[in-house]
Length: 440
Image (tube, helix red, strand yellow):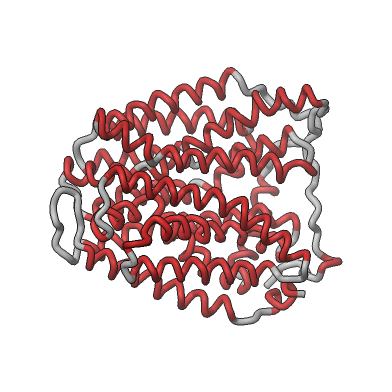
């Protein structure tokens, strides 16, 4: 396949220090936390809030603008395709101009998209607005991780990266009850006006609070040779059988999880479980709390299990199985335990995040960033296709009006994606050369 040897003594798991980090006294670390991590973390908070905001306001959007289920699915999922498309050039741009400058420009684009969404009254302008939002927040997490790598010692990156991730979880939590209350009082357009103002505030904070990182290493900015090598490495990754064995199930499972977290769980709770808007917001709060606990808990559990000799791929498989059981229960209309199913979906759906560590264990150190970015891009492409596809399937059943959809259509759509996930999971269960290595 052209890949370097995966035998442990041949894998380069080191990270080349390309830029010297500042001195890290306690006082300096606190200052960096306040002036670097928190501002970039607020950007990721905003990214996740924009990603999931439609789950609560979807009935209002559909009713006010006469949107079909496929319209709503496409409109919400267009965020994912713009997000995914920008991931490959984003890495090069971050290296060339630095996370602070890139973040400022992208947040201005997101603010423009949010403002346009607030005033749009047609599907065309809503789609353009949502596309601008997706592009504008597509760099929030990667910019934050890049800044952490610049400012913090390598040994402490897992902790500070985890701190950054928690901002995204709080963004998802904010997209539940707070958004529902604001929309109930002032309408969904006011939600986006507030988001526009908040985005501008974060852009200003990014511009005037975050210090510039001085690269004193004397290293050149990425040149044409480096860029060519990056794309050559991507070619190796995309030709690798093990990558696709992991990527297919992760793309489907992660795509379904994001589709329901960002949109379709809300209509299921309303139309199948019979929940009121306030109850939907409360249930989605539980969903996202489940995700928050899963992100932390599954990481801890996987560390402990690996210390007992249980391979990470086994843990990933178990997480997918548990998530599929929850999804099957939702498809079987176990509405009496809908809130519990939301918690379970959030918890076990987050098992997708373990895949990034699994890939890192099975590819050379210098390819880890690229293989994770490749997987991340596929997940967002999957989310785009699945979220839109579910809406298309639902539209085969007549709409119930007032932003409500036929429960039979929703159940058939979910059953369809579950079948696809099961087929992909069967392939994941088949042994491969690197599958054997991981288990050792």
